Picture 1 (tube, rainbow, N blue to C red):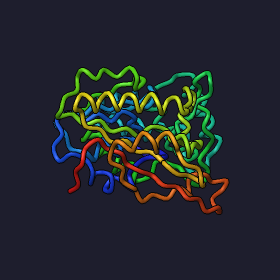
Picture 2 (tube, rainbow, N blue to C red):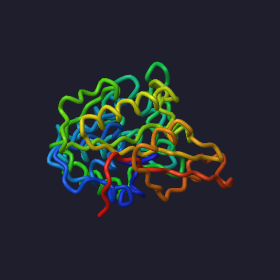
Picture 3 (cartoon, helix red, strand yellow):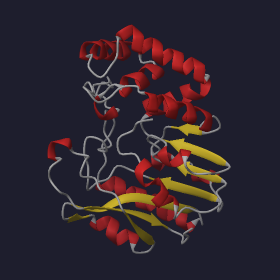
Picture 4 (tube, helix red, strand yellow):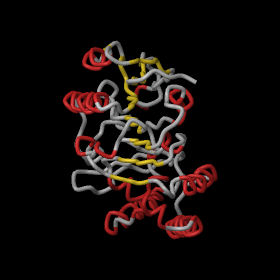
Length: 278
């Protein structure tokens, strides 16, 4: 899954701080599944507020890989989808907004600008065409085949993190959180995309949620940005003092294409309530 704002480039770094053995792994803001797919656990639960994304994953589980690839190829052929055919893309986008089929959304996103899942307030997909950049290429095909094999036993959910039932967790569980980042909000991580946004109160509610996990002896890790363009996330800074904070080497200069020539200072961190390093 090409998912902007994913953790693929830093997955090896953050995994250094994950528990060595996990019975139940919960990816509370799962996005493109970079972390879930690369984390070994006896059971995996993936949750995301974007239910359209979760519906795609459930559709992946229901169909064989041959069915998936045949569907994708047939849509590409029917609408002549490519890196240059904007008219075909727009026609397919109109078709999807009338029919709302999950696999069609996957194909649509694969040809859209920056592979973004964006919807208007009526939940119509409105991401523009990914001219000369986005298309379902051989790398995406290969990754889809691998992904299909890996997620067959995953449980997918779409609930607000505040509504997640923590009663299913115990001391052998591990919860990973990669929420929208308050400091570095952009089109790829603003938490909206046709859904509700993300602000300081959401951060505070998430901190409370993680504090409750900690009191129950449940391990967690939180990815976030603590500094961006000279601004400091004061609430995160204060809250994290009671836990373990690790700097993650990640540069977000590329994320805002309108300011791609400006140098920015962004410090991503991983915060855990336990100490472990391989």
